[in-house]
Length: 302
Ligand code: CP
Ligand code: NVA
Image 1 (tube, rainbow, N blue to C red):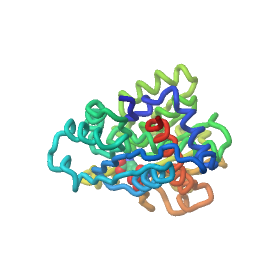
Image 2 (image 1 turned 60 degrees about the vertical axis):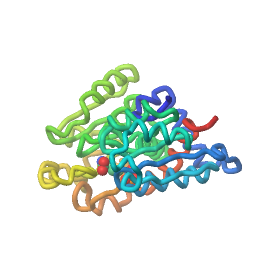
Image 3 (image 1 turned 135 degrees about the vertical axis):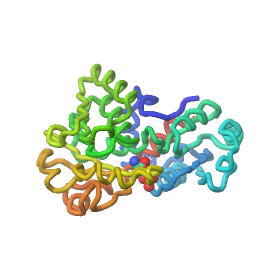
């Protein structure tokens, strides 16, 4: 079944999805209900504000229905096999969006389901976020001939950004402490794609090098959901990688500041930056809605 587990699943359609998201935002489908009567099951093993609300509201606005299924409440959380969950949901709904701890579980769900599965964040990727982020850069910068620099943890968000930048021919850099680089396989894949598209991928502990000529400076929490036990070590290891006014000066003067949210002010970013004039965080959050609609349309439209 055609599913969105990784940015790589949409390789030939990335620009289409961004353009479609823009069309949704511009109201081109306002008088239509392109997903009328479609049903989306949304399984959440972890907390969410943006992903849950943007999928739910998006589905409503497209004419369909979304069901919020916390794993605290459904039998999957009590150990019902992924296979049985996939087969049963496939008899009721048209698609499944899932936020899960283990990427492998989402892969299994997609293999067993007879309907599309959309990754709403795993430990490896957060593809839906990346689409909203690229739309935001396009809106603020006018084009995608740009450099995005991620400062901090080579986590799920940065993995998806690395891939999407490579496909779009954008330059991607990450400044991270040793041991916190993006996923190895994703980096290899990104480098392979970048060779074809002409983008560059830089992975370095050096903030200055990574931020040189950056058009967008992006960060995310140092302690992702599920990593709470490592909080003390991570807070120490990332201390030098806070995005503050000094860090922003290492990028282009007109660089935008980005964060997928939720953020911890005073840790990965200062209030001055996240609440300052270069910040576009609420545009990013809004664009989750438009990107989600484009993704649901792509996967669920007859
Ligand atoms: N950025 C993001 O995915 O936010 P939520 O965790 O609130 O869904
Ligand atoms: N890296 C963060 C992203 C939250 C949207 C996490 O996984 O918790």
